[in-house]
Length: 79
Image 1 (cartoon, rainbow, N blue to C red):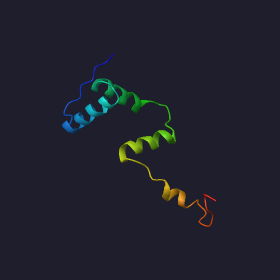
Image 2: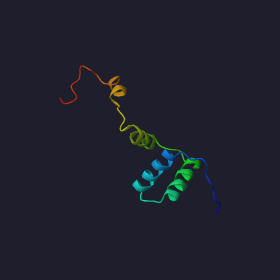
Image 3: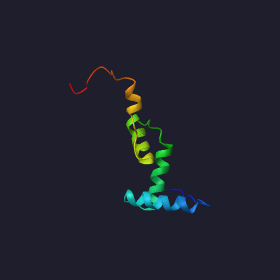
Image 4: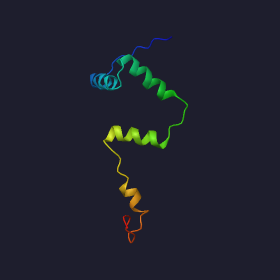
């Protein structure tokens, strides 16, 4: 196994990494290994994965503007 040293890591990045690792129940080192493995993984991500990532970063994804174009304004969806 290789060893990697990261110099000049911003304190805020380290703090966010610590929180993320705790949220996933791992050490910071294990979290970094997971992040790096995922970053170089050749597996294609699904739309669901991407939306879940957006949800985590932005607090949610509002699909109403996209669905409004497809909806028939004359049709009552609850009728």
